[in-house]
Image 1 (cartoon, helix red, strand yellow):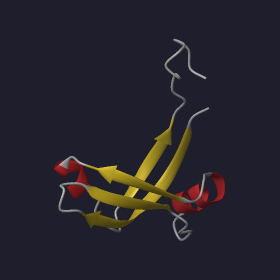
Image 2 (cartoon, rainbow, N blue to C red):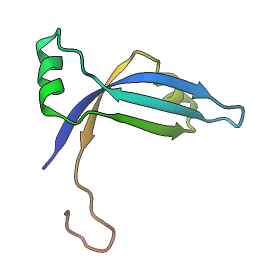
Image 3 (cartoon, rainbow, N blue to C red):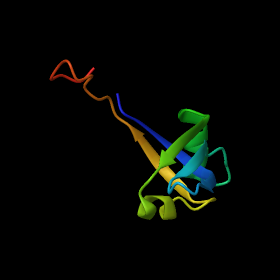
Length: 82
């Protein structure tokens, strides 16, 4: 099963070591029909990521909205997906 969710960048915290911590929150807005569908049918919660590539850090602007696709991946011990 593949799962698609819609998240919004809540914050981006830059560190002097050259990376950033990006926090995404599930989009819970229901004023748009698509957003209402995502709010009712997909996971809720937050994701915190450490990002080192500058172009990626720059893309995660607070308030920007992103789709996340969760697709099963092989576990590394089998050529088959779980």
